[in-house]
Image 1 (cartoon, rainbow, N blue to C red):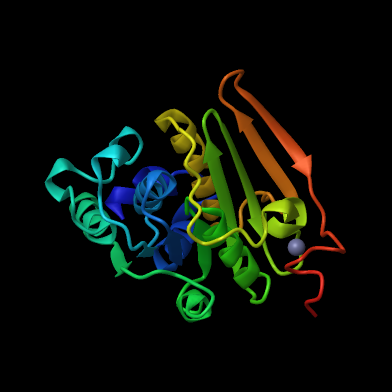
Image 2: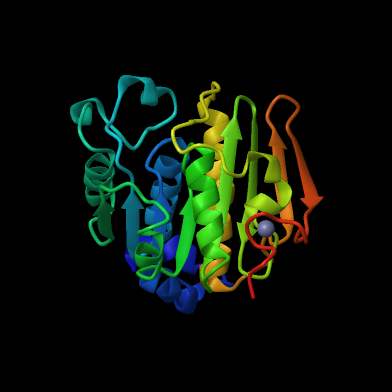
Length: 242
Ligand SMILES: [Zn+2]
């Protein structure tokens, strides 16, 4: 517990909150830009069990924003590289690598192993697949997205607005279309840190979370905006559930 002394010193966390963090199970979907920052944040908070799902390999073009990976793991599986980094940083954390393509057929099986899911994927197909899956369970999903100088975060549950509620025009996007726009590291780490803060609050039960609220960040003028979102009665994903 010496490692977490400064966490525990915060009265609202204390030993009880730290125990919740140490006993929690979080699945990080994607070990790229957002994922690498989220994984480090979770490990420093002391989240005891971190699942990482990704089937990509470490490439040199990742290095403008993915600092969990090192030159020594170039060309290796991202889940292996991420696990290696966390084992060295905090060996008390149980890191579970899932070197698979998460899809509609297997997503519920992986969700069932975790309390909380964090969307760090880089393509709309996978982001909608997570959102679709979570509104059909009792799990919670922390969505995050980044593009150029902008980013966004929201929390999705069965009874909240889902991703397709507020961007229905991108629903049914083919699975091989990646978000190929440029991105810089400070925007990625800002959004990843907000996702990590949401995870912290959900696990410990402290504070209010971004349910039915889309937090939007513009790095160029350092502006945060909160947009109220609500369930869309014509949503192609969640309108006909229940
Ligand atoms: Zn919806």
